[in-house]
Image (tube, rainbow, N blue to C red; front, side, top):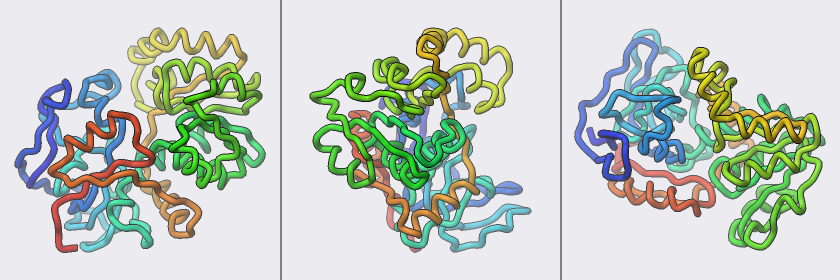
Length: 338
C-alpha cells in the first residue's frame, strides 16, 4: 500500500510517499481502509522534530493523526464495528499512521462517522474537534454566560472552538483578518477583532478565560485580558508540568524540564493573577461520537478549507504551513470502492 512516511526528522525532504506493507489488526484493533485524512500543525511540528521530547517515534514511521474511512477487518476482541462501517478517528498518539491507504486503530478510538458527512469533511473533525471540546469543557470549564477569548478563530481548531463555545452558552471574542471575519461571524463569534488593524489587548478586557491557538506574542499578551482568577489554556505555547503528568503520563524528569521551559509564561500568568495550562489533547472515541451527534443535529459545522489528492500531500503540507487556511486541510486517498 502507499503511505506518507517520515524517514528522519527535518524539513519537507524528510518525508516521502512510498510503498509499505499493509498492516494487520492486533487484538482490540480495527483495520480501516482510509478514504481521507486531515492535516494539522502537529504533523509538521512532528516532522521537524519539535515534539521529540513529548512524543518520539521509531523511524521510519507513517505520519498522520486523523482519518475517515471504512472498516476492512477487525482484530480479535474488537466487536463494536463490522466490515463496511463508516468510521472516523484521532489516531493513537504513539503510533500515527493515518496518511496511508490502510491504518490500524484501537477500537476505543473509533466512532461511527456522522451520516450527514462525506469522508473528506469527516476526516477534518477528530483532532481539532476533540482539542476544542477538551479545552473548553475540561480545562476552561466554561458554562453559560462565560466570556472567552479565542485568538485565531478562523483556523482549524478555532472554527470548532467558536461553535462549541456558543453551544455551551459562552460569549466569544476572537481575532480574524478581513477575509476570515465573515466566517467567524457566521459561526457565532460575538466580537471580532481585526488583527491587521487593531491590537486585541487594547479592546479585550475581563475575560473569564482564553483559549490560545497562536502562541508567541499573542499568548504573552493574552494574560492581560483575563480577569483575576481566570485561566489561559494554550495548544501553541510551551508545555508546563501538568502536561507531562496529566496529558502524557510521564514522570518527574519531563515535568521538571517543562517547569523550566514554561517558567516565564507561568510568571506572567501569576503577575496577572491567572493560571496557565498547555493542553496536549487525548484521543477518545466516546467524545468523538458526541461531536458526531452534534454534527448530525446541525449544531456543529466542520469547516474544510481545501482538499488535496494524496499524491499532492507535500503541497498540502506547504499550504498548511503557510498559515492562511480557513478551516481544515484534508487529503483524499486514491479512488476506492466504498
